[in-house]
Amino acid sequence: MTRIPGYSAAKAAVSNFTQWLAVDLARSYGDKIRVNAIAPGFFLTSQNKYLLTDPDTGELSERGKAIIHHTPMGKFGEPEDLVGTLIWLASDASKFITGVVIPVDGGFSSYSGV
View 1 (tube, one colour):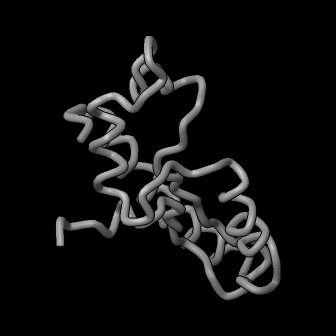
View 2 (cartoon, rainbow, N blue to C red):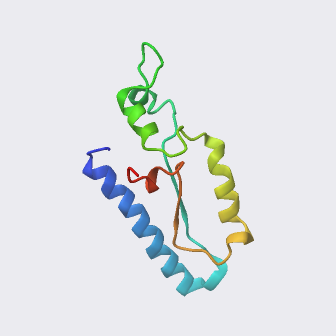
């Protein structure tokens, strides 16, 4: 949806670096350091509000509608939606997990138009 190769390359780089760093640190420090990442989906913020809503009406822009249409949960994320994943990754509940990127995106990354 972005048509911006730099954005896609940066996302791929974060995933690759997360995996590389997890392997490198696990080999050096065992299970003392874990490296994981959270990949947020679309969250309506002051930074992207002008892209996702019409400034005159406050209604969703065509881009905003397309994102919601491709998000199975049918809404934008809220900042607090990230908290549970963060707490889980920081806790012993995920002590054998390293090198993963967890999407918190309402199903956006899973959507294939089914």
